[in-house]
Length: 444
Image 1 (cartoon, rainbow, N blue to C red):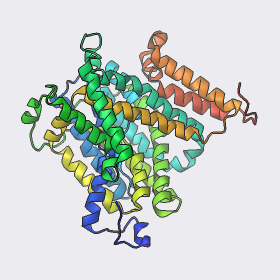
Image 2: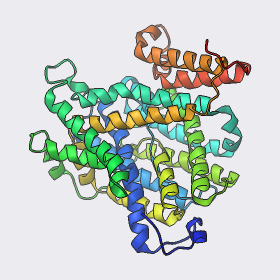
Image 3: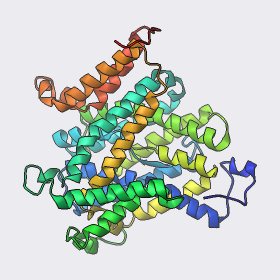
């Protein structure tokens, strides 16, 4: 969407205020770009915790992820004290924590997970004091490996959902034509809009693909609106709604992924200032942005929402529209907060057939892998770097595929090492720091 009434200098100014006739649709565009990615982790974790589609607990979890994505975004755009980059940074629920959260939920429960999120969020906020000096620890080789491993670890979940869902595995209806048909409708509509449409239709391609699959599922008798009718029109968040426990595996896991998330936020802030203002981000902006990341996550966990992070797809929108105004993203945050206070919206989302969601997440998780590969394209492939990639991925994803290999370890270590992501991150960071640089680019 073009903005014509602002000067070039105003476009690059985060404090500029576009006319509301332009600011509101631009803000809505930011919400459409991240909406599906924001509520999807809530559904994944809710199903791992045993919630059924349309259940009040799943509705609440979706509702809180929308509400606190909006609040965390306000921390970034408006800010207070040292908190916030005061830039157009859109916050949302992070995919990066899912490989750690699933085993925690299955082994220790939701109370342990949310205790870990609160403590991990406070640790994440502390990283704001040192994050500018941490960037050298995570070069493209390490960050690319971590992002690739996130996507690869989640791909089986996407396929299970597209085939009908985890609860149906082993039953005749699992993998049935109805489920795959709905998933393929979502995939084809999403791809068609992404590559053959423009503007908001292209930006919200996956969201519109999910809506198409949802509408097709209604005459097929696969949608139950009973819980939507029962849901209230307004509800406030409940502190510690799912309990609160201190669990070592949850705390350590969330803290370790917070380091990766903090570096991702640094990259997003740098991308916003370069793409929108043509300058480098200041240390104050990097520090404030990381503070906002962590504080938003800690507050979310206290009320039963999942960890927050900056959303990279919205960074691309800044470069596309050329509008650096933080007022635009602030309006998007207000829209998310309103959605988070209306349980009927969460109930409507949670009534979506799992195969419809599966079609969307197959695309999204595949794009996570693609984003990691894109990061790795900047790596010079010496023997050293090939060995780091080989060992990190083999051990990390291998342990996730065969968790029984860890049966003699303490429960905390089993949860952490079977996540797939943490072993990949740890091994790649350590080997990158220890192995000497070599110039030989030939294959092994």
